Length: 409
Ligand SMILES: [Fe+2]
Image (cartoon, rainbow, N blue to C red):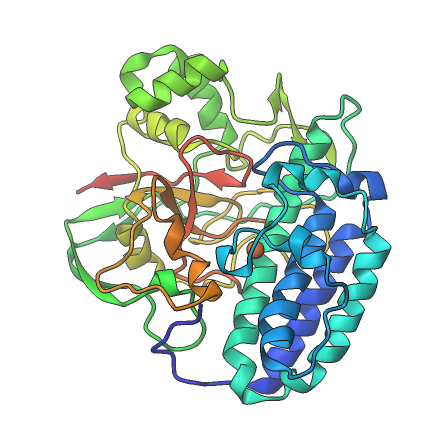
């Protein structure tokens, strides 16, 4: 939920504009997909594109319209059961692994439902009392745009024909300053300062003591990862955390996800791997093993944030529209890939969950996961910020995950 300390700075015109842009982009991401593509669910962690289309609409219909517009009638009373994700307070719901069985409603029916919700939302977009909740709905929908893109990539990857969702595109690599970002240590102020929207897990702002360190100027590349492989990185137990070594052996892992020989699977189908592009689709275990092999370590989330506070979060390779998200490499702290930190995803001091269903947004997931910082090429530009905390389980790697090395100085 929005930071409870945030001053109400509702620029209603801006919110209405971002609502429309965000809603339109979600629909545009479905345009290249057939009904069959949009219904595929390749694993329990991933959801059908069509489900994301419906679930983001369910969020607005439930928490804005149903809860705040007296007399509002649900578009279809049966649909909350299939489009609720994990909100216990909202009652029973379809099992997560069964979302791929939803041949109905069709994409066209869900689009009609979205149009109806957008129409009903119009008066609320101009009402300041709903600004904070609408901000949350926009941020939520942006998160699902990224999941939609990573989930459909995993689904299309299962097809031996290697279907492309988007046509090929060339992206210019940005120049990189090779100097590491040095930080002298000391007390750093970490967490969201309350100015504007943030998720509850980004606060409260608090002090953290840092020792002198440096962050690498860029993300680790495919070429460097190839050196790690050539050096036997996946076969050397000394480099791995115990859980990671068990995972590598049980799953027979010897490359990042989506690699095959010199190619990798992308939203544009199979492509030759660019050696200078950031490596992506790696697990926490792999990131940690690589950092050990390189003689460095992963940063803590606090180190990352202390450096990132000086950078513009809207820069870098992030999602600007319905086109293929592909890491290209460059400087700056944002874009291309989410960056693993060695920090467990835990509540900050004095963190409190909000009451009701919205309180289930973040807090209940603070167990067994690691924090990732930055933003990826599939993150809607402007969605992330220096205090933003993404989080995944250490074995997961279907997101655009990468790493930036850190070292003590
Ligand atoms: Fe959601």
